[in-house]
Image 1: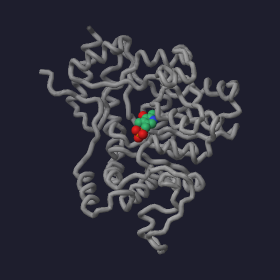
Image 2: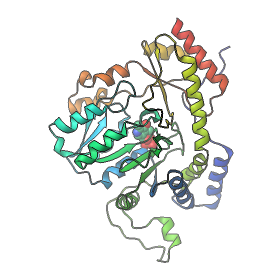
Image 3: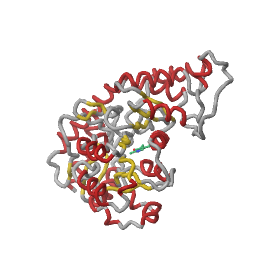
Image 4: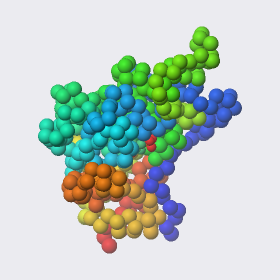
Length: 384
Ligand SMILES: *Cc1c(COP(=O)(O)O)cnc(C)c1O
């Protein structure tokens, strides 16, 4: 008996989320309003940051972050080559350029030595305005040297933390490390709001700009207009902004997802530890490595390496188990490859890693018997 298919990812939406959405539908305030304000307030309290600004996607959050630091046409931003295209595409919105950096073979995060080399020797090094570390799978990058390199040069750090809620670097939450941090609440991520994201910063100046630009460059949003003493019809346009605000239906889901974040994390950690225990010593399979035991890994993904990767994925599918690949390195995609005339071998570690990586299902709705089925199936496939 093969049983039913185990999907690669599933959001965990409970009755609380459903009731909260229904409440918003009934009270009639659907766009940015009381639920969004509460979600932001709760998020701020969770991390202990100064500002948490809800947006309609992680991608819009990254765009707003680059706008806030004043990125200009022709500027350069260092981006790890092993990421989702969103990290790099937002740089192109400014007619600026990502400079790709290879990854570390162990953690799959940005390689700090190569980052330093880029900062010191890249022909356009004087135009580098920011570094965008991506905490891949939920494991925090080696932030100590990254912070030092950036501070020495007056370069901003915009963290793509789409995988890293909640994660910690030593005792410090991701969100409190770099200049601006962006989380994603896409359905496959560790906290889901259908579509959504959160921009976090301790800078009042950045927060003010992000708040302005996420909603048409208006000096106050619809909810502020309802609740202040100025006439509700009055607003002033201060800039050509964007339409990136979060709606209250998404925030309704987010409020209750956030309340369960620690419980969700504990379950993902449990699944990860079962995988580690059951799969250690399986011949031909490499488990994901841990950079520092002192950090908290969000375990958005559990990325293993196998030699016959494509075949492995096919066999898993035949046994009813969904998997995925994170990521196809950006320089292999037609757009990026052609734009910057990249060769596959330009980023040898990312290329070699890509050929072997597979992401296993890791989410709270996985049952123990499903986890057992997954490890048993992997052992069987690896013996074939
Ligand atoms: C999901 C993801 C994003 C984009 O988030 P959206 O909320 O879907 O816009 C950005 N970067 C990485 C690494 C991601 O995995």
